[in-house]
Length: 180
View 1: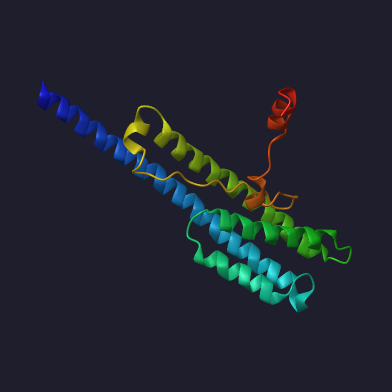
View 2: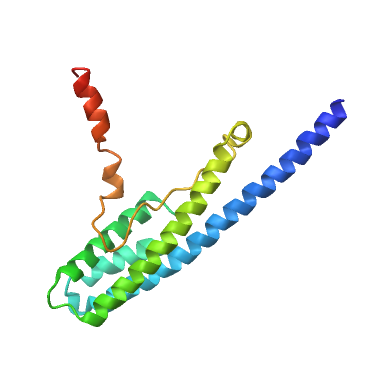
């Protein structure tokens, strides 16, 4: 009976580990696709920003170099992309913007937003799997959850680092109803 229980646990552990590795690889593949397109997008912004038209090239290069050093989705990566997206919104608002540049940005945004959706879906699937009960008892300290990107290109976003500090409206309503 003990040997049978040990075999069942060992076989279960093998299949769980294999599933976690496959889901982790799927997230990594989606991340690499997204990150490659983020670099292409940044290069497009550099071309549009020639002669420091919208932002100093030093600032733009600093953001781009910081992005190259980040190998996974982090809050810092999202914040850098938030600032690049603000640059995009400046470019879109400029009445003198070239139509070709605007079309290239729009095309890039559609592709990036699609890749973000794919990455976030794979990340959520991975997180849901390692957090599911009873699997979470085994994975609790062994595996780290994946961050979501939570940014949409071409539209106004909140800074990812500050939006977590904001109190949601529903919490404020509860506090008001309790007289706090």
